[in-house]
Image (cartoon, rainbow over all chains, first blue to last red; front, side, top):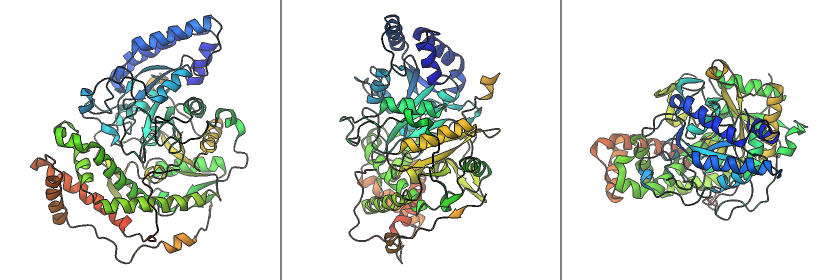
Length: 459
Length: 85
């Protein structure tokens, strides 16, 4: 069920919040031993919330929009009473959080019920979904395959039907890559739109948070519940909430949509097929070049390495052996990057932002592949892109990095190819999440984009 | 499907051309020496067995950095350390 279906079942009296929550825990107990998406459950807390909602309904109180909808969060969000592990071994020794992350507070204020914390790549420095401490999250479409990362558990839990939606974070593609590989809708909002307060950081100047769900409407509803200024996040924009749920049905209504050319012209069959299907459905018959996208990706790569190294330097000095070696070696390398080159990358970033902003005078949205391939096998080290054999870990985000680098809002729309789904990025101008969500919703209405259920759930 | 290509050449794009002599990717020996010295300077407790992977990653970072270093920007360019979308 979608979040909307669940909230409607509760509001109409067809299901109690208690039964909805118990059903979620039953699904998690039955399926998660295979999917490996959850790292912690908050059963007592969830049951208390459910009973409170059932009591509110019995008293005929007005019900909030997400009443009784179970959800879970990537384990870098603070949950009161739990250490915020951020996919690591080291943070298991951290004291329990004393307050929930802002977005959990806002979702619960809107009636949603937190059921647990989700697996992720260590310290979010990951595109694969593999984790040496907790084991890999497994793709519900094929358990031998990667979920993508680093919001691996978030995508696996939603694709596996365990919860209707989940929260993830996205620095270089960590919502968009797993949404693509698991065939889900994902929203990376504009940088500064949603509060990151009380989440564990990765690369602060790129860190975003957002929802992963099974429909564009669920993205919109959950996003609306989370919007608004938060003084606890120093980069949260001082903007009023700009609700999008009410404008979803406006349709395409003259939107100018182009396909990203040049760097984004993928040389693999599935991404090309997915972008073409979506472009045809939208009547997007123009190509547009995002200037210097390859350089933007490189700049994102080195700023990430530098900021992440700065964040983890104390832990590298005291607990280097407790990192995943693949994370540790990249962080140590990042610590030795000359500051002059990082400063140059930041200057380039402003130039690139200004150039890309001009494109939005010509178009309202740009389509691009989300990943260069569908879900690879767990443990796979390389993949073919055209005639080249590329390292997988470093390159799953080649199409997402140049976009988050300048904070543009993106919705990933899943295209249900066979045997595996793959996503397409719908990229909009800063602060125009509404445009990307309207397009994703229109594609869903046409049946071109869909979060198809994995085979095990269809039986 | 036939798509039109949107032409876009801007003043700032013309001004910001790659420089004539960009940074080259460093040789593995140079990067190895930098890595060995860097871990000492930063007081990082690195085991010998980790060195090769650190050098590989540092080499990759320099490859990416070369693309940025080779892109000419005006002296007045402002960095975006606190980014606003």
